[in-house]
Every structure is written in structure tokens, then in C-alpha cells.
Amino acid sequence: MGWIYLLLAGLFEVGWPIGMKLAQGDKYRIPAIVFSVGCLATSGWLLWLAQKTIPMGTAYAVWTGIGAVGAFLAGVIYFGDPQSLLRWLGAALIVGGVALLKLGGN
Image (cartoon, rainbow, N blue to C red; front, side, top):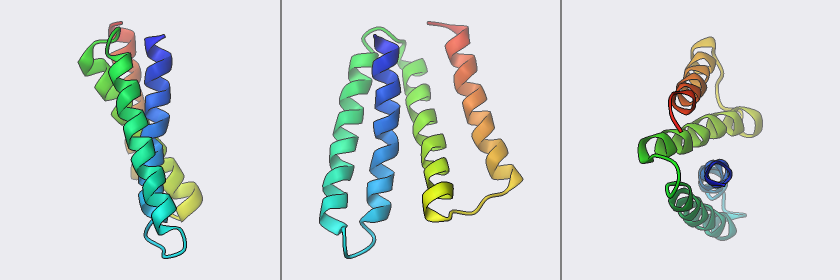
């Protein structure tokens, strides 16, 4: 169950920077900030639950990895963030590092 909590925590970790990006415009500022705070709180709570059964270092690395790569993908897909081979390689290295942490332990 810890890994399910951790996956969900990572997905909510992607939500709050998306909300912050949306809050930059006047039209959705308040709802986007509320969304961000809700995602941040939910993500932290799910990480707390996951750390009951997953080592802290592994859980934190997976959580931030999902958040970083997810935010990168959301930025590219929905907000027109720049793409380059090096940026994609960086995201792949994050995924690879997270996979090694998972394979190396719990």
C-alpha cells in the first residue's frame, strides 16, 4: 500500500506547480492558489503515509522525481515550456535514478 500512497503523493506533487502557473493569470488566480495548496497538503499527507513502510530516502527521491518529471512534462505539453535533447535527457536520468532506488531496496 505504501507504493500506492507514494505514487499518488507524486501525482499531487505535480498539481501544485501547475496551480501556481495557472495562478499567474488574473482569471483563475484564487481557485488556482486553493488548488495548489490542496495538492501540496494532500501530497505531503500521502508522503507521510508512504514513509510508514518505505525508507525515507527512497520515498523522498521517488516523490520529488515524480514531481520534477511530471512538472517538466506538464510544462512542455500544456504551457509551451522549452524542449531540448538535454532537458529530455535530464528527465530520463531522474526516472532512471528513481528506478535504481526502487530496485536497490524496498
